[in-house]
Length: 199
Ligand code: GTP
Ligand code: MG
Image 1 (cartoon, rainbow, N blue to C red):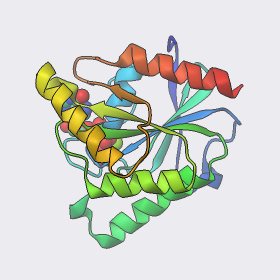
Image 2 (cartoon, rainbow, N blue to C red):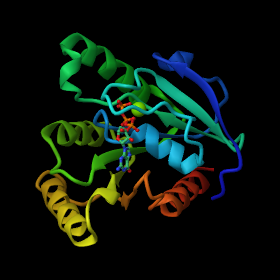
Image 3 (cartoon, rainbow, N blue to C red):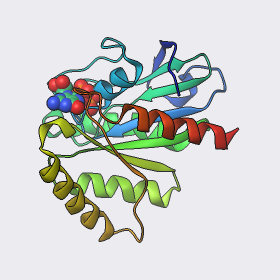
C-alpha cells in the first residue's frame, strides 16, 4: 500500500468523541516508550505527525490520523509506565480500554513489543485481555536496529516461547525499526490485506 496523504484528524479520551467518519481503524498499542508514535511517523514518512519523546508517557490521548482519506491510523497512550503513579496509570488505562473495547471501526490492533527484552507480565496480561475480548491483533517487534541479526532472531524466539506458555498459537508477527525503516513495506502490506478483507 502507498501512503499518499496522512493528516491529523483529532484527539479524544472517550470513544464517543473520536472523529465521526465511519472509516476502518488500525491502532497501535504497547508499553510506554516502545516506539508507537515513532513507528506511525516512519510508516507515514512524516517525522512530525505523531509526537514522540525519550520520556515515557508522552502520548496521553487517542490520536486519529486519516490516511489517503480512506482509513484511520490510531496512536494510543502506552501502558505500564511505572513513574506515572497509580492514578495516572488508571486514567490512561481507562482511555485505552474505552477505545479498544468500544470502537466499532477498529479492524486491527498492532501490539508493539521491544525486540531487545523479554516479554513482561504487563504485556502478557494485556494480550490475555485482548484474547478474552476477541480483539484481533498482530505483534510488531520494535527497535530491531538495536541488535545484530543473530541476537535479534534469538530474542524473538525467546519471546515466542514466552507467548506460547500462555497461548496455543502465535499471532501474526512483524519486525520494525523506525530508525532504519525496516519492516515498513511488510506492515503496510499487512494493513492493506486486513482492510481489503473487511470491505
Ligand atoms: P509513549 O507515547 O510515551 O507511550 O511512547 P511511544 O511508544 O509512542 O514511543 P516513542 O515513539 O515516543 O519512542 C520512544 C523513544 O524510543 C524515543 O526516544 C524514540 O526515538 C525511540 N525509538 C522509537 N522507535 C525506535 C526504533 O525503531 N529504533 C531506535 N533505535 N529507537 C527508537
Ligand atoms: Mg507515543
